[in-house]
Structures are given as structure tokens and as C-alpha cells.
Length: 545
Image (cartoon, rainbow, N blue to C red):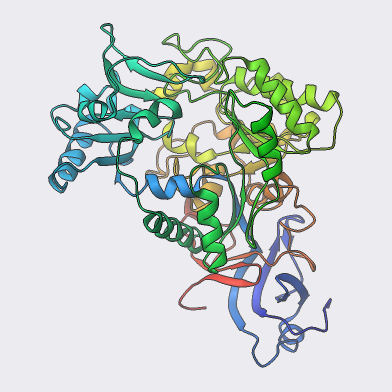
């Protein structure tokens, strides 16, 4: 037994301790926590003897304990705000969308805005994505309908009118107010700059409403077994909201926050991003910078080496890709890790080229990341390990938004060849890349067991009887667990502090009623979460623990 003379603040007994770093169970059945870290491992008798009169001692009755699960890519503040509206994610066709909107409209107060999210472009079939397709339901109602990718939305005619958007606009980034042949907006807004034109005309929630929505979302994440997340934005009031919850002892997750760097950022903006690094509180800190190299395949704003079937997805998000390369070099020299949204093959290739150039120009050892990586050729796959670039993947996007027969919008846009290399988790893993897993919530649900399950079965979560999309790209049970523990820690540069069950490591712990590695992938999402612990503090506890 390894121990410390100080009395622990938490003792867990009768547990099966699964360390993903070794791939197996430890011989120990109990652990103690002191000062937020694992201070002792041993059998129940030894560890119980360490407890003082006030030490909480929890018996887990054989539950499996793992290092705390970490979502490597999510948007807590944006997600908490976006998901407060009408959920359209279950609507498979336009009739279902219209029915849901009609019900929501009946409950609207006069003049109120209708907000909805999760709209799947596959619901439109072969029809173009326009507000007119939803007429007359939205006539005279100001409405904003987020598409599932959160990179585009449909605005009703009344919403466009209130925002004063009556024609095309020019932007510093790849964004568009989509217009018809007569120059009239169709309602489709592509990318943040265009969406913001209409969003700012809608009423904003109060700070207290934002705080409560965020707190509620984070409590749900803790109850799902998450102990941490890599938050890929610091927009608006995000940092102030994290600070307020942390100061009040109400932050149930350990958050690593990456503020955005957008096209047009000058030297002063880059200095501000560098100076922001390391700021934070007890359970959150600013670490890294998030950038975008393209948009999404579904709305035609990805950057592909060959156009999609509509002749779209041909341009980078940065109008001058060389400016992005310069920014990566500046941040690298300043020791700041970057995480770049890159979905299309051309976008991913350019990110890797930019990182390679930055490394060649010298500077400190910095781990950079690519987020999403939805379709890439073999030569790109092989470069991740050589450059030590993290492959941050969200397998449930493949599960829930594409189909095995390639009849979905994403696959049809790409064609058979590129759709056949969707979300190459297996190939990246086998090529030696560090694959970190996440949900991209609110784009997909955040429960981490469902994320790990999707990485293994690659089937739609709503119907597991459907065939998998690219089963040859599935991960194993232990690999999926590593993707949300060991590899998430490595992606954050925290491999000496997190991701393992070992003395001296953070006491960020997740406990499950069944072994998440041995449980069948199609049953994993339903496994009960028994306990969640962050820094020795219990953030979720099942009724029977």
C-alpha cells in the first residue's frame, strides 16, 4: 500500500479500479483522496484504516472506477443557451418540422421570438434549405432555427426584417447571407458572422438566466460521468460565467477553455490571446486558442480539395490561408497550443502544413490539435503522428448525421470515395496518432458513455438496429476509454496529472455500474453512472451509493 500520513478527504471502497493506461484492473479495491489527489491505493481494510472521524467513506459494491471522463471538445455556454429553445433534432422530414414549429408557435407570446435548434438538413430531402420551405408556419413570426451543425441557421422573413437584413453582405471570413437570383435573402445564413446579423436583433437572456442555464447543463454533464471538458470558445460572457460558478463552488467540471482567433486578427489581438493564457480559477483555466480553417460539409462551407456535388466547399474560412499559417507560427513561438476546426481534406492538410512550418521555424515544444477531421486521404492520416498533432474526433457525428448507405446529405455531397473515408478513427489510431474523443455538444449529446459507444458501434443512437457507417473504423472498448481519459490528458499536456489511477494523480474519477470496456457497445450508453468525483469533491452520486 502507498499512503500519506494526512487524513484523507474521501475514501472509496469495494471498487474495481480500471486504469486505461495499463488496459486492466489494478489489484487494489480501494483508494483514498487527499488534497484533491489520489493519496493511497490498497485493499478495503488498509484504506478504511486511513479514514478519520469526518472522512466520507463510500462503498461502491463492485462498481468500476476509471479516471474521470473528459470531453475533448464541447461548448458549454453556447450549448446551454442554444438548447434552451425548441429541439428539432428528432424531426426526420419537413412535415415533422412544420408540426413541431406550429405547436411551439401556439405557445408564443405576441411578438416573442421562436428559437429552435438541431434542425437536420436531411429533413429537407431534395428541397433547398430556405425559410419558404417552412411557410406558412413561420409567417409573421420572428424565428431563428439553428441547423444541427451550429454553423448555419434559417431566419424567418420577420426575423430578417427586424434585423434589417434585406440583401447580401460582405464579411472578413467565409460567411454568407444566401440570396436568390433577385438578391433577396432566402433565410439561410452561413457561418457565425452572417448568423450574428440576425441574432443580435433578438432579445438576449439576462446574466442570471445564462448562469442558471449553464449550471443546469454542467450538472447534467457531471451526472453523466464527465469530470472535465475542453471548452472550445470563450465568447461573450463565458469566462465571467465560469468564474462566477467556480467562486460559488458550483462548477462541477474541470474546464480547459480556448478563446477564438478569427480572420483579421492583428498583432494586438494575438498579444491579447497570449496574455490571456493561464488565467482562470480553481476548476477552469484559459489554455490554447481555437481557430477555424473551414465550415461544414453539410452547408457547403468546408474546404475540400475537390468541390462537392453542388460545386461548393471550395474555399478556406480564412480568405487568405497564408494569414492563418502566420498566426499559427506566432502562437507556436509564444508557446500557445492551438486547436483548429478542420473538416475537409484541404483544410486538414493546410493545418498540418502550417504546424509543420511552425515547428521547422523553431520555438518551444507545443502540442497542436485538429478538430473534427471528417474526411482525409491516407497521406494526411500518416502525418498526425509525425507532427505530434492531436486528432480530436467526435464519432457520434458520423453515427447520428450520416447513413451507412450514403444517402444522407453529408455523403451525397462528398460522393462515394470521400464518404467512404468518414471519421477515420481506426486508421488514425493505427498510424500512431493520439485520438481524443468528444461530443461537440450541443451538436451531439454530451453523455460520454454514448460517445464511447459510438466510437465502437458507429450506428445511429436513435436506432441501433441500423447498419454501421464504416465499421472498419471502429475503436475497441479500451481504446474508446483511453480517448476520453489518457489521450484527453495528453491533448491538454496533463499526462503527468490526469488520465490514470495512480498515487499523486488528480482525484477526478468516474464510477459505473458495469465495466465500460467489457459492456457491449450497443448497451454501453445505458450503463448507470454511480459516482462522479472532481478533485476529491463528489459532483454526482447515485441514490444507492
